Length: 126
Image (cartoon, rainbow, N blue to C red; front, side):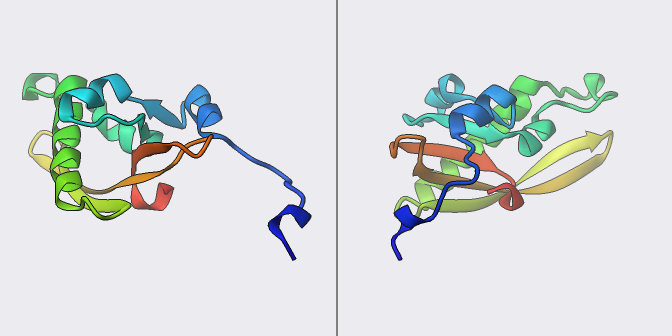
């Protein structure tokens, strides 16, 4: 039985996920870290990029947290050049003196039209 014999019941494109806010497009920011492909971050991981309330005096900003995440993603990508995904961990300050270790996955795969794209997310969101 060929795949064409199965009716498509539902599809959800990468473009739709970006429009819905499920994926956050950071392609422009990713260029500064050496990424030359379309690049998105899953919303569940991106929620860590926005500092929780109460951390204003702790030197936390969305820009700084995104920098940390993207820097670690770039280092991990260089180590896993021959793989379609790499895993790494990031520590995010969640409360004064309390960090949370977050496991991330950077995946290169096909976009809506088969083109290579990058997705950075939590492993359970891939």
